[in-house]
Image 1: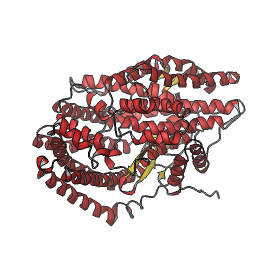
Image 2 (image 1 turned 30 degrees about the vertical axis):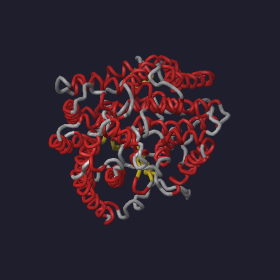
Image 3 (image 1 turned 45 degrees about the vertical axis):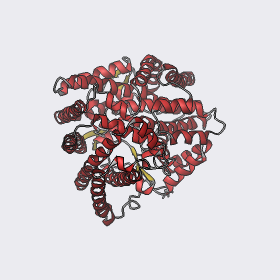
Image 4 (image 1 turned 180 degrees about the vertical axis):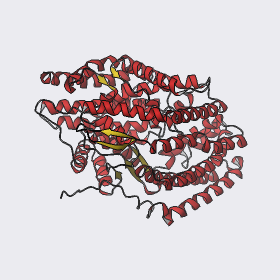
Amino acid sequence: MFFMSYSQNWDLDTIYPGGIDSPEFQTKLTTLANQIANFSRAVSNYDLKQDQPDYQELARLTSQAQTIESGLGTVNVFVTALISADYTNPEYRPYDAKIQQLMVTYQAPLDTFSRRLATLSEADFHDLIHLPAFFDIAFHLSTLRKRAQHLLAPANEDLVNQLRLDGLKGWSSHYDTIASTLSLPFTDENGQTSTISAGQALNFLDGYPDAKVRANLLDQYEQMWTKAEPLTADTLNHLAGARLTEQKAHGYQDVLEEPLALNHMSKATLQAMWQVVDHNKEMFKPYFARKAELLGLTGIGWQDQVAPLNQIGDYQPAPQDYDTVANFIVQNFAKFSPKMAAFAQNAFDNHWLEVEDRPGKQPGGWMESVPDKKESRIFLTFTGSVNDAATIAHELGHAFHSDTLKDLPLWRDDYAMNIAETASTFAELLIADANVAATDSDAEKVVLLDAKMTNSVAMFLNIRARFIFEQAFYQERQAGYVPAKRLNELMDQAQQEAFGGILTKRHPHFWSAKLHFFIDDVPFYNFPYTFGYLFSLGIYAWAKKQPNFEAAYIDLLRDTANMSTEDLAKKHLGVDLTQPDFWQAGADLVKADIDQFMDLSTQFIK
C-alpha cells in the first residue's frame, strides 16, 4: 500500500479542537461579543480633542479593533472551512449566521470610529499618522477616513448593516444553499452512469480527458442550471438590487466606484488594462485552432478551453500523485526564494491543506488566513491533473503573502483583492515554468505549455466575459428585474465578445453556475484576477533582473496594504499602471508562450 507522506486533509483542531462543538470555539464567540460591546462603549465615549496631541486613547482603540477583527477572521475561516469540506451539512449554517451577525454588530462602532477620524483636519491627521503608534497603519486609517465620507447618519447606517444580513449576505448564502443541493447524471466513456454533485461536474468539465464526455456533460450541466434558473435568477437580481440600493444610498455615482475604491485603484488603470486585454485577444485564435487539432476536434467549445491534452506523439500524461507535486513545489520555490520554500514545506507538514477528491465538497478553491494563529488554511480538490501543481502553488502564494505580513499590525495585512491575486499568480507562474523546464521532451513541453495557457485563457478571455456580463447586467438591473432568459442572452453575448468568436459551443448559464457572481462582500469579483495575473507577469520579468530577488519581492509584498495600487507599482517596479505599456509587456509574455506552443506542436499534427 502506498504511504502518503503528506495528508490530503487539513487539521482544524489546531484552531479550535473538536469541530463545531469545541468549547474553545464557543467561548471565543462569547468573548468576541463582549469585546465588541466594550469597543462600542469606548468609541461612543471617545473625545478626540481631549486625546490630542499624543492620541493615547486612539491608539488603544486601534489595538482593540484589530484584536476583534483578528478574532472574527479566525472564527469565520473555521466555520467556512467546515462548510467547504462538508458542503451539504446544515449544522454549520447557524454558526455562519451568528458570525455574520457579530461582524454586523462590530461594523457600527467601527463606523463611529471612522467618523471620529473624519473630523480631524488634514493637518491634524497628518500629524497623527506620523506618530509611532499609527505610522504602520496610516494607509488603513486614511482608508477608514475616506470611507466615512460615504456613511449615512449613524442610525441609518446601523439599519443598513442589519438589513445586509438578510439582503446582500442573505442572498449570497441562499445561493450556496441552492448550489449544495444540485446534482446531475454523469455518463463516462464506457457508458457507465452515476450521479455527481455540481462541484464534481465543474471539475470534470475542466479536466475530463474524453472530449465527447465533456460535451455531453456540458449539456447535462446546462440542463441542471436551467432547472435551477428561477431560483438563481431571483437570487442574482435581489443581490444586485440590494447592492445598487446600498451604493446609491452611500453616494456612489457608478457601479464600479465602490469596487475600484476597495481595490485602491483608479478607473484609468482598469481601462488601460482592459484595453490591452481586448486588443490582444486575437493572439489566442491560432492557439485554439492548434489545440482543436491536437484534441481531434473541429472547434473549441466552452468545455474544451482548458481541457488537458491527453496524448501528444508517444507521450501520454500520467496522473500525478500528491506527494510528488508537493515536493516539486517546495523544490522549485527554493530556486527563487528559500523563505517561500520553507513556508510551503511548513504548510504541507502541518496539514494546512484540504485537497481530497470526494463528493460533498464545495466547488473551487480558496486560501484564508487564520489571524489568531498566524497560520493559513487552503481548500481545493486534487485530481492528479497536470494543472494541479500550479493550482496548489497559487493558493500557497496567497498564504505566503499573508505570512510576510504576520509580524505587522493586522491593519497592515488588509491588502486589496487585486493585489492579493498577484502573489498567488506569481507562485503559479514559477511552478508552470518549472514544469516546462524540467523536461527535454517536446511532446511533454507541449502538454505543459498548454496547461500553463489555462491561466492566460482564464484571465484574458473567461474573466473578460464575466466583466462584460456584469457591466451589462448591472446597467439593465438599474431599470428593473432581469429575467433568466435575458441573463442567458447577456452571458452568451459576453462570451462571444470576450472570446472573439472562438467558441463553437458556449455556456449561457455561466452566470448561474459561477459562485463569483454571488459573492456579497466584494462587488465585481472578476477584474482583480486579471489585474493580479498581468501584474504578476510584470513582477516575474522584474524578478529575474533583481540581484536579491527574495528581499525585493518581500519588500513589495509588505507594502501591499500600505499604499494605492498605482503607488505600489511606481515605488517597486517604476511603472505607470494608467498607461498601456506595462500591461502590453505582460501580454507579450503570453504571446511568447503561444509562439513556443505553436512551434513545438507543429510536428504532432497529423
